[in-house]
Amino acid sequence: MPQPPPLPTNPLGGGAVELTGVAGVAGKGGDEGLPEVAETGTGGSPPKALPVLPLCPAPPPKPSEQREVIPPMIGEDADDQPRRRWWLPTRAEVASFLVSSVFHTAVFLALGAIVVATGGGKSISNLVASFTEPLSPEVAAGDPEVLMVVPESNRPASDAGEVAHVSVPQEQPEIPQVVLPQEKPRQAADSQALARATQPVPRPADLLEAVDAPAGGGLEGRAERLRARLSGKGDGLGVRRGATGLSEEAVERALRWLVAHQRDDGSWNFDHTKGLCQGLCRNPGTFASTTASTAIALLPFLGAGYTHQEGEHREVVKRGFYYLSTRVRITADGIDLQEGSMYSQGLAAIAFCEVYAMTGDPAMKDLAQGAIDFIVHAQDKKGGGWRYRPGEPGDTTVTGWELMALKSAEMAKLKVPRSVIYLAEHFLDTVQRESGAQYGYQATGRNKGTHTTTAIGLLCRMYTGWTRSRPALQRGVGYLSKWGPSEDDMYYNYYATQVLFHWGGRAWEPWNRRMRDFLVSTQATAGHEAGSWHFGHSRNDVGGRLFNTAMGAMILEVYYRHMPLYDHKAFQVEP
Image 1 (cartoon, rainbow, N blue to C red):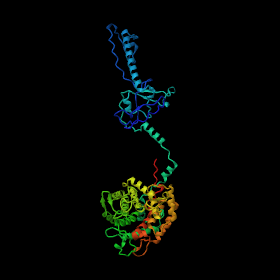
Image 2: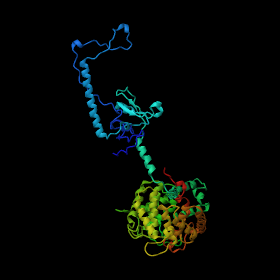
Image 3: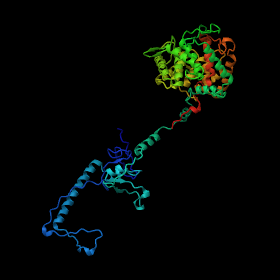
């Protein structure tokens, strides 16, 4: 049970009020907050009527001393009653009176000595309970006499500052049971006010950080985009945020190309020539993981608002997730979807987390949580990053996908240990350059920051909580703006576009025009390749045309794929 607060100062002066316990009568409810008064102190009027000890009986008077005593009657008529005479005490009655007086004097002196010994000589005027509300029936019925401070507005002018003794008889007439409103204890309210008063005043920098921290980033824009498309409206969320009708049609063409290259078992393969394509499209990839290729092909469908439950592509999405579920390996550390690389684990985890966040399908929840649990297990517990195999010292590219998966899990309200994020921040510290404005590939060596790893590092910093007022983040955004979009590195374009979109403002508008219009103009429009992209960068050759097409579609979906992290509408200011 919590200890009572320090003794408050008596507003009438003379020391502190000693309160015991919680207000109310034991066994009674509904009167929390009314303090009990402890009987301590000496001098002045007692706060409670002490019990009167029985008097020693006086001996009966002798027959010769007996006389008629007629009690007065209210409203009696003097003509109907005998004349009354003054009573004169006898010597025996005088003696009885003196014995009683001496006895009671001795009793009061003894009680006074006990109170002085236990109360430290405090003034009885300190033992005053002040109530802001009328006494409850339970308190009044349980205490024969209560000391109350009469408000000065209700006192006679001569009694200002005096304490009035209000006697409440023990026997009260029957009172109807009324549910009284609960009132917080006076002392508790005072303690809360004191706690607020003693808290440090936030510094201006703290207040600025509270309003420019990343608080958005949700997936709700996807459903709005799909509703606008189904209703035939061309002014959906994407157009309002910087898309155009041409860029939206480019997204749909890319999705149709992906549909045409899904295999019979529901999967996609980076070597797209092994399916129905039969080599009609050039530039196949070489990466062998089908969980990575299937997951990265599913992400543009989810980004456009299509799920296994809604939209024209729901059967395609359903078959894709069915295939991913067949690749699950259940381990003691979670669901393993690597197929040889943690790249695959991160991509598959993002897909499961996003579809669960968008649909709430319970069949997806365990798959998503299991995939996240394995990512948590695979983190390098010393350096904080991730690489190709669980526990290996991390690199920035793999770490970027795993952090994106963890962020997707948070959006889906899955379990993500905060310690994993703290450790990942430590890894970012080891690969940063210029205090975090640029990022390298690994902590070992003296490799300089590259465009791609800098874009990945900056997006990870945004997701782990860096504010817009942070100088390193501002300089990093300046670097990306200066470098501009790449004409062949879709990996860099994918991350840099997200950074600039979340940042917004003047840095975003020129980037968006260049990136959007470049993709619209370079999308294939003829033959079996129509709707796809391929750029001749060394990194693109590993994933081939499938990788380029999925990344290009997600870049053009940036307007609604994630809501802006620093959108002022997402701020929730706590009182």
